[in-house]
Length: 618
Image (cartoon, rainbow, N blue to C red; front, side):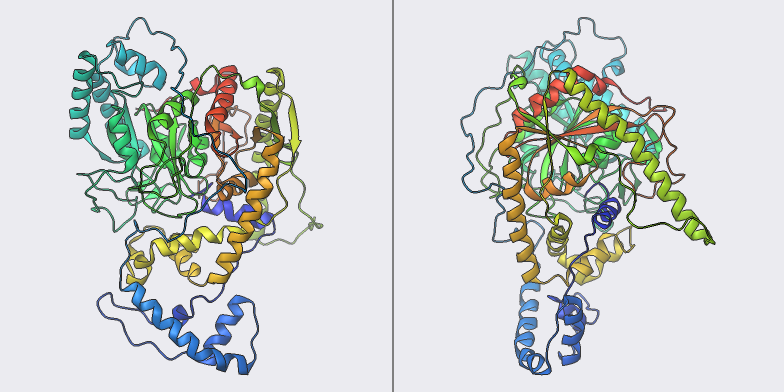
């Protein structure tokens, strides 16, 4: 779902943001456990219940007001059951559409043919095809086009690697071998007949297992959904089929798109298999980084492309909200979900984006806009800013800290963990600052900027309320007990808490979100690109406002890096450690994803960090 749910909550706490809880769920207070086939009689609503709900809502009511409310609350509660009896599937969206654009915004709809860079020709194909495992889409596509390598050979090579490394990295739910081999043979036949479909033709890829693929399970990574299947392919899958790409695997995701823990275990980071890959596009990033697919598709609601791309050292494109249709993908938050590519290089992402973007007539949030990729675009014409505070040293905690004990063992442990986390952040900041220095060396003039002063963390319960609605039946039926993770910060509890988020507060948070969109538009009126630290407040902000982001590798931590925690609990997305990757993020205006990618490609070409890959133990 995000940086990692726990990391985001920690960030919100640092920002002084609390969650707004309350009683749109008077029903929940009154409800007894329900059998799915038979609803038990609910107790009557009483003034005492209203007192409990009012306390959660942070309001006070007089006895007269409570008495006056009783009949209305009774009628309101009665209406809940009628809707619940519809058993709305996850695929049914609400009757509203989120629009991330501010008033007066204009979108370019005039499409131009893509202009790709000339690939560095690989003259001699290696005798061991696995030497191409980490090649870019640009390079692999050129080899397949010139028939130097067959799609079938590439597909069999990548499937063999998936099988070899999956026991270590746990990044695959299902290998779609029969489908893949048939597609690969068809690709080879078409190319031989002169029916070349473009740079993805014949290239093996992986789909995050929240994308429906006919004939195979679509598990959403969650216990209780292991055998779930759909009769139609997701739009993104159909579009990649049309581009000639070869689907070889359904990759793992944290259960219902949170973190990297799924019903089969925990997906691992190829750079350090003792660590998780982060999530929720856990398998997509891990498999791409490990050279087991040519590219993959992930999704992001609040960090699910950004976080695993950072942890695994891949390049991720989180497109503008509404650029890529989500039809056939699991819904978590209808106003925040986005699908995008996870690759080894920025131009790879652009090639995949070219194949998957644009309205499909089903996802009504998908907008008609142009993604005009031009590898030769003059990125020097772009105005570039950076989020000044994110590159400054971390401020000490406000208020004096006791310098002497006595401390309990638990207090000592927390102090050690806090100090270690601070040391890791200070170490990683050197890489962020080096990125600014490199941009200066490239001739980029950086304009200092600040994010709008708004309570962004207080808007994120929108996501949780929508997620609770998307999985309402899971909670009401009690099947949430099948999910692997059952802690206070895991989905089952989050869904229950979200039932107490009032409809009024949901609307108010959306109104605050409108302010956020307008304020971010003011920033992008000053610049075309914003450079940002990946694991920072911008991640929350730009997911709320629907802005695109490109996350690129920004180096490898040295042997002098602070040691990671002995155990990866998921509470810190940047646990680091020697020999693991870091990233930098570039942000852009709505639907300016192609220019954003062009700038990110220039940085990537100047640094070469994307060419580094992990030495995965066999």
